[in-house]
Length: 210
Image 1 (cartoon, helix red, strand yellow):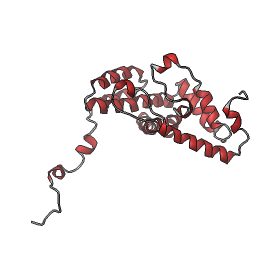
Image 2 (cartoon, helix red, strand yellow; image 1 turned 120 degrees about the vertical axis):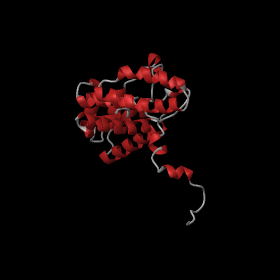
Image 3 (cartoon, helix red, strand yellow; image 1 turned 180 degrees about the vertical axis):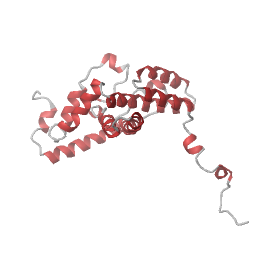
Image 4 (cartoon, one colour; image 1 turned 120 degrees about the horizontal axis):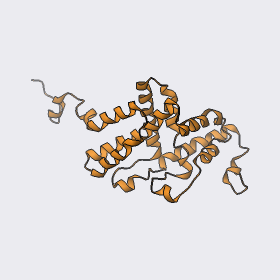
């Protein structure tokens, strides 16, 4: 780490102060857009939104697969934390830009006391050898596929092409089975078909006794 590195200025701060820094930094993920949607032409999402549902997808997948749901969800939760510092590079950006995501994550954690607890999630996910890491990798793709299915249902035909492009990246059978069901399910069914059908026929105003 060089003297011109801004991380130097954070060294020596008390642990609780660094934890406060870390939590403020986590908030930056709400302000960091996922950049691929500019090519899709519709839809939008920030990194915090993506990480939240990815963690839920990972929990669900692991539970279905008989793996550790909490361990999988934690990998998902932190998988893009580095983007608070470097932003989200889509597949075109990555042709021309380089970065050091792990260094960004290490710097974010430095002095928080969380290093030994959280950094192993990063290494395990990158190695993608454990069942939980493979499920977490799938959860990352499935969150994208869920968004793409919504955009496809709303009329963006290119979202369908993107879904087909994402399918080969799935690593687990349970992930592939879930995606198959996602592609067969209208994204509005959970709320549109949920209420009693008579609800949609009711008129405005207080119901009068007959």
